[in-house]
Every structure is written in structure tokens, then in C-alpha cells.
Image (cartoon, each protein chain N blue to C red):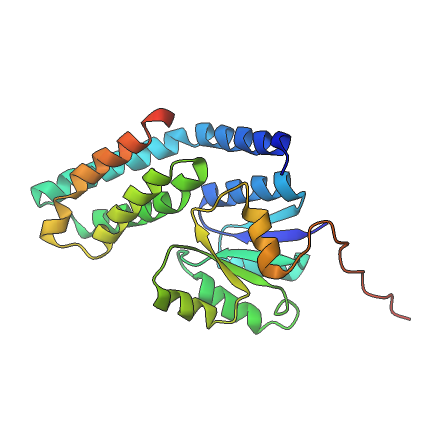
Length: 136
Length: 107
């Protein structure tokens, strides 16, 4: 089962995203209400992907992403930024960070899982990657 | 996606909307007060900043609940509150009214 970490300071966004991903895709959802907490959860839980708001009080999404990239234990986790509709220049700036994709708010709860799967190349019904081989 | 899953998601979203109605009403009241202050020329910086944050949040989430027009109007308010000018600030009152009208079915 996929595990997704949602990082957003807005309760409504976390709740709607969580229930939609659980109900439509059966994914396991983790949540954090700040970038700092999100980094802690990512390091402890190693989700398959992170869905993160851009504009958060304190540490914003891009700064949180850059901090994650400096941590080798979580730098490989795909990150999708969640943002209000923005100008082309902002889109290019976000894409230039090295994130895996950008999703726009407000999103459609019925298609959110599908959008994430398409961006990350996850095929519906395909088996999850095998677990690491046991060390000898 | 099958109809049963769609109906389940719709029910969950409707439940969340209902649960969050008190918070939404407070946010709409705050935007009404901000619009009134903007019209009378008494809008303080702290009020503007708070209203900007609220409008941003509403622009991002009303559409998820099936109110795309609400997101659109809140987004207009957000942009006015981000870089306010006297001629734009006086339009906030009409937008605040339009926002409530767009949500009337769910309030």
C-alpha cells in the first residue's frame, strides 16, 4: 500500500486530501501541519511521496523541500508541491527547485489520487516495489 | 472510479463541510468587516494581512467542496488585499457579498 505524507498548515486541505486519497486509492495517509513537523515525519516514516503546500507560515514549502534534499535519508522521496494557481514565472521557479510535480488548489477530491499517480508514473493496480533484501 | 466510491467521497466531503461551517462563517464575517473598513478608509495593516491570509485559504479550499465560484471570488479578494490600492479596496464590499452569494446553498 502506498503511503503519502501531506504537509499543509490548513486543516481543510489536509482533511480533504487525506479522505479523498484514502477513499479513492486506498492509500495510507500521514499528515503534518508545518514544514518542520513534515521533515520529522518523513524521516521517521519514509512515505512513498510527499504532497506539500507552498505557502505556509514560518518555513514555506520550497524551503522545506531544500532542507529535505540535504538529508540523504529522505532526499529520494518524490515531492509534489500544492499551490494556488500561479503565473508561468512562478511555475518555472517551483519546477526549478527539482520537485517532481506541481498540483493546483483547489483540487478535485475525486481525481487527486489519479493526478498524483500520473505525475509519479504509478500504474493503478501494479504491485508495490519489493521490500529491500534482508542484510546478511 | 465506481459510483459507490464517488458517493462515499461526496458524503465525506459534505460531512467535512458541515463540520467546518462555524469556522467558515467566522472567516466570512472577518472579510465583511475588512471590506467595511476598506470602504470607510480605516483598514489597519494587521487587519489587511489577516484578511489576505483568510482570502488565500478560501481561494484554495472552497473549490474542493464544490464551490469553484467561491474560490474564484476569494482569489480576487486575495489579490486586492495583497497589493491594495484605494480604487481596488472599495470593490471589496461587493466581492464579499458575491462570495456569500456563491456559498448560499451551503451556508
